[in-house]
Image (cartoon, rainbow, N blue to C red; front, top):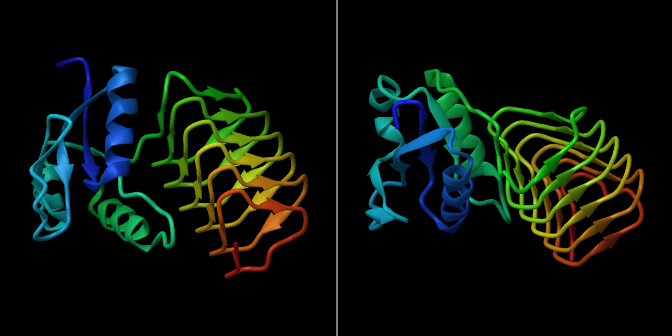
Amino acid sequence: MSSKQEIILLGAGGHCKSCIEVILGISKYYILGIIDKDRSSTKHILGHDVMGTDKDLESILIRCPNALVTVGQIKSPEIRISLFERAKSLGFNFPVIRSHHCCISMSAQISEGTILLHHALINTSVKVGANCIINSKALIEHDSEIGAHSHISTGAIINGGVRVEDRCFIGSGAIIHEGVVIGTDSIISAGQVIRKDVPSNSVVK
């Protein structure tokens, strides 16, 4: 335990369980505990204690410099953004968390606070913004860009040269064709095949 860095998890739902599994598998971090919303009835997740709310972050920073947002994101990224910005303003560090079972090109650029879950595949010259979820078996092909606070869901395929702008959600099994732009704050539902640009604030279902 002494050789590991401590990390605090921000959010105690189902996505938190997936994050815990990844963190336990990489042997770099020791999970100090979990922060949840006010009046939460959750006490433990997979053996890790819920130790407070975001109101306690300042006192926790004294002993733990690292954090990861572990709230999921489907309809809106606002909770994830709020937690990220609150903890950043206090001075927390947000490492990139990557499963040992994912594959990331040496030329890819992954920004702070992003988690890459099991069997995610990130190809050459890809750029991924801060505080993103790249979920299990997601494929992001060469030269694509994923904006900050976005969620690329399980099994989604982002083909070459795609640009997914900030705060987007790409649903499970969706396919985004080469060179397409997905505008800011858009939602692409599960299984959709996108062949042309999608304007900002769109919902495709």
